[in-house]
Length: 288
Length: 249
Image (cartoon, rainbow over all chains, first blue to last red; front, side, top):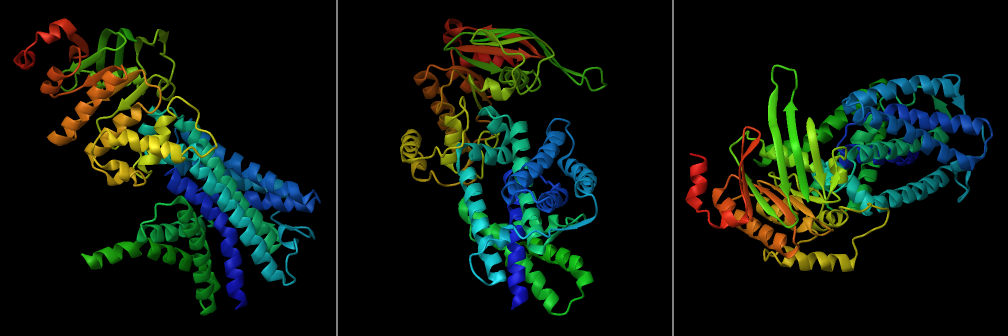
């Protein structure tokens, strides 16, 4: 059962990415794949700050700022230089690989710090402790994002991705809004890197390769559930996205436990996401 | 209130597909005036409206609103004066947001959208009271997503949204073009009432000559990017509906 707990923990770490992708893809309707880079950036900043024995409490603010800058850059390239969003994301993601390497100084850095998020002791069992700390952390994060989306500013964010002509006519600078949105999305993604790095105990330059699929998959699972139950509440939507992130990791863990070759993991991941995307349509075909 | 001085607009300047949309438009619309613009397709009506709203930049000339030059202001800053209803009912509202959330944003058209939750019980009651005027039964559906409503309902709500915040100018770009005759009638009558009640300065673009005849106190005909006819309130009252049809003969 231990691998299930690990999968849930990993899912909760990735749920920060899922929230980020939810904001860029669903709220702003922008396909942003800066993710791979900003996730690693979050991990790298975490590792280097902890390795330099800087205060644990400044790690998260640093990670958030770093992620936000990466996202804002993608946003600037997309809105001000009128570059396709997908390409803007790829450009920043590619550039971040070098930036991450410069920050980290080498390709892999163990944390060797006895003060991380998960050493905050609430219960004696280390794994359960990690789970509890994560649940609290993600709950706070979700409350923050949920509140933000309910405010007047949040409504303007949601309208920007939904009806640009309308929200411009209502006095919102949509370019600025998109830049802020991508900054928030990538700050969340970097927070995912912050969590994973502390959970696994090291940062690696290639930790972000293909991580965008976890975010996308989680959001798509969440969205399938949202459409299934015709959810309109933003709170329930966010919780379903989190659920999507955990379900995703559980499915992958179960697949591996069935004895599937670990080298096939990415293939399995892709096929799984494909299935999730097409499942609702296959159901519709049957119905008609 | 709205003043245009020798406004020219050329699309794709210097390219083979160059189009002169506006060729020297001078127009002065005074406070409280309700001008109706008619003209065949491609005569420059929509371009004119978009230039006033700021979503298209002019090539040369000046646009002034309320006495100040607004040439450099983008559309989202001109929203301080202007509320718009678009030809496409989908453009004026956000389909995935509830009616309430749409109204909340409209209530902040001239203000900052801040980090507080503005949809409270007082606001909900205010929106319900406003919507009840329409008599469409929508006041009990304020939590429903805008996208679940018909085009006519959405257009009528867009009109109400325009007066949720201080509004000086209302721009209506063929608001009934996509609607069935009954919905179109509701939308036009609502618009007329709001314009009178709130003493709005308005411009209506329409292809419906009956509407052009019925509503407004000034009628302007455009052709090939120029104003070719401008009939003031007094002359308009003496106009017969058949006269309008003859303009297009």
